[in-house]
Image 1: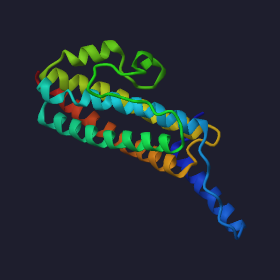
Image 2 (image 1 turned 30 degrees about the vertical axis):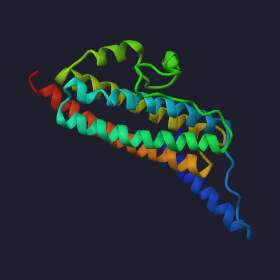
Image 3 (image 1 turned 90 degrees about the vertical axis):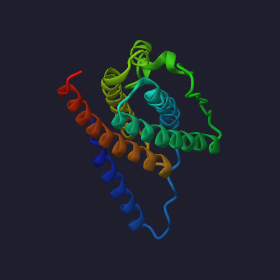
Length: 198
């Protein structure tokens, strides 16, 4: 049974308070783990694919609502890629290089290993769509993609010591909150699109 993210966060907060209350010394910040490195490196490729396909919206005759959503995804996730790359670089870990202008990127050949990543067939299907069909497919695939990111966060917090380092904890918590909110928004947008004549 998976432990809900909020329960993990609450338990971590209670544990920190207890340790600090039991000692007059400041508790040293949690060091990062291999799970943290795996999460940050994996999420770079995951975000890069989202930036790639969101960048297609203007040239695929997407609706104004979908284009606005895509602009937010591109700006937000590009900034987060920089944060993750800096986090890895500062710890002398391998930093995945990504090029969001290309149709495929390093690591995409193994997309099935990362939750929610679009397959080559899905990318081709989305790439060749236009107008309302692009909107429909983009929303459907990005919901899948965001759900995969949430799975990655849950896997991180479910691992031994994972997500306890401050920057990783804050970033993973933000990913969970932001992408849950966007899934709700995209689900409503998709429902409206399904009720509209093509």
